[in-house]
Length: 270
Image (tube, rainbow, N blue to C red):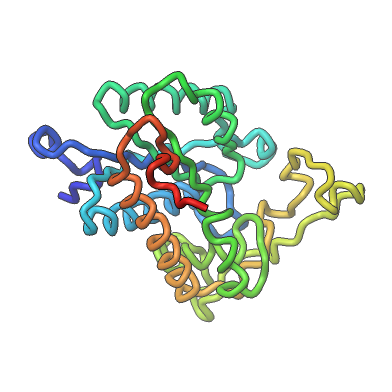
């Protein structure tokens, strides 16, 4: 039994060892180029969550990893076979119900660990704010959490099923990566994407939801051919250190009237 993993833990332990912080991972079920499994986002969320919670638990934090939600918003991948969609409103309903459960059980600190770019949780945090005693934090691990190290670890920027995700897969679920039996090369296309015709979109001045069947050839956006397991392990080290460090701080922080901000008495005087 790993007591930081709720699915493995029994009632006898939980009754005697209440938790301070819950981590709720969200994944997705969708194609990832020709070589990665449909559960890639879910597997990533699971392994990152398990390792971060283990490290936080080892440092004394009473943290628990909830079972990973394996579905996400796939409205722009409807034309890609077997993408399994939850509309944003459904995703909010799932999150709200689970937050209510945590509130009932006295767990008032939650980290949503998101592993799918189609899941946009920030509006949900705004809608739930003030309606629950649970304080909700969000980590889109593939965005800000690693923004300063991605270029140091990986050779090619990518968006979906490219070098970064393939490296994580090679490191942590390699048996599910399709590879040439003779050379070991991943059996994927180059992950090229169709350019958008509007300059404002290309420059980031205007955004849109991208129809994935038009954007990509085989659902990949980014070249996976330089991926290695070593790069995946290097990335995981960064993720675990940063997320676990936050969980330790979060577990220790008192839920006072100024949470999550520094109380007045703790501010430095100018």
